[in-house]
Image 1 (cartoon, rainbow, N blue to C red):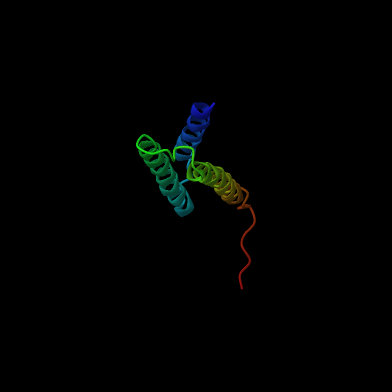
Image 2: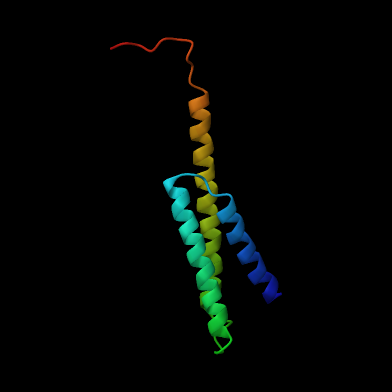
Length: 98
């Protein structure tokens, strides 16, 4: 069960990196995803030499992954709305001159 928990975290971080929007916020999401992945790998490596494998840090990183997923979803929605907004501009009417 613990292995499945770890697998789900790594899978979600990989999905986040693959579906990142092409925005400055998207670049930040990629960097945070890589940082969380490296943090998880570091905790697992240290866990081989210590009894802290089941410590709370691992669960904090899992919670941060869930928060990053939420941020990623919001960034995708914002990018989609921006794309829809540019498509919906009506070019048949001339712009008002001031």
